[in-house]
Image 1: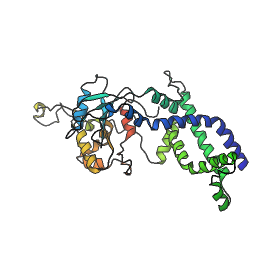
Image 2: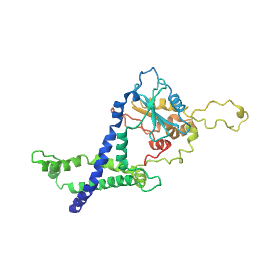
Image 3: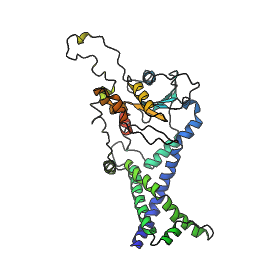
Image 4: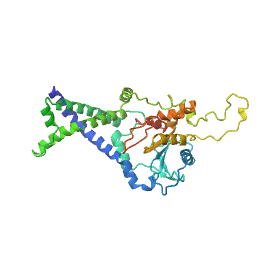
Length: 346
C-alpha cells in the first residue's frame, strides 16, 4: 500500500509542486503588503497632528461622500485604536477602493492605490496572472490554482501515509534532523521532519484556500462549520436595508395616523447610526485594534433598530480571540464585500 502512496506522492509533487511554490511565494509577499505600504507612504496612513477627539464616524463618512460622484458611495469606515493612524473609508467601486481621512479634521489625505508589485503578486496568487473572461468563459487561472491546491492536499495526505511509523523509536527518529551525515541525509530529514512539523499549517492553508476557487467546495465547507453566507442583493440583507439606514426608511411617508403627513421631516443621513455602533463596540471590546463599521454591519444589526434591542444585536457580533498581539474585532466580511460591489470569491 505504501508503494502506491509513494508513487502518488512523487508524481503529484513534481508538476503541482512548482505551482504551489509560486502560490506560496506570492502569498508570502502579500502578507507584508500593509507594512511595506505604510513604510513607503507614511503620510497617507498617519495624521499630521493628533487632536483631542475624532469627528463622529458618520460625519467622516459624510465628508467623503460629499466629494464622490453619484455612482460611487461610502460602504464602510475602519477606525484604528492608535490615535495617530488615519481612518480608512471604503468605497463601492472600483474594487478595493478606499481613501484615508484625518479623523480630527475630516481632511481626505489621499486614495489607496495598490502598488503594481502587490497587484501582480495578488493576481499570481489567485489566478496565475490570468484574468476573468468578459464572455464568461472558463477562468483557467483560477481553475489551475484550485486544482493545484486540491492536489497539494492529496500530496500531504499521501505523505502522512508514507511517513506513518510502526514503533515509538521509529517515530522519534523520524522527527529528528541530522546535520552531520551528509547533505543527502540532511535534505531527507528536513523534508520528512519539516513536513510533519508544518503539516497542520499546510493543511489548514490548503483546505481554507480552496474556498476561493470552487463554489461547490465553499458551500460544503461553510455548511460543515455552520457559517451562513450572504447572497448579494437578496437574502436577509435586502429587506433589512431600511433599518440599516438609521431606522429612518419611512421618512417622507405617512404612518397612517392623522396629521403625520405634514410633520416636519428631518434631514436623512445614511450614516446616522455609525457612531452609535462604533461607541458600543469600543465599550464592549476595550482591547480592540481595528473596528470596521459598514453598511453590511448595519444590515446585520438591523433587527436591533427594528426591535429596540440594539445592544443585544451588537453583542451578537462574533469577536475574535483578543490575544495581546492581535486583538481584532471581526465583522461579517462576506456581506461587506458583496455590498462593495464585487464577490470575494472571484
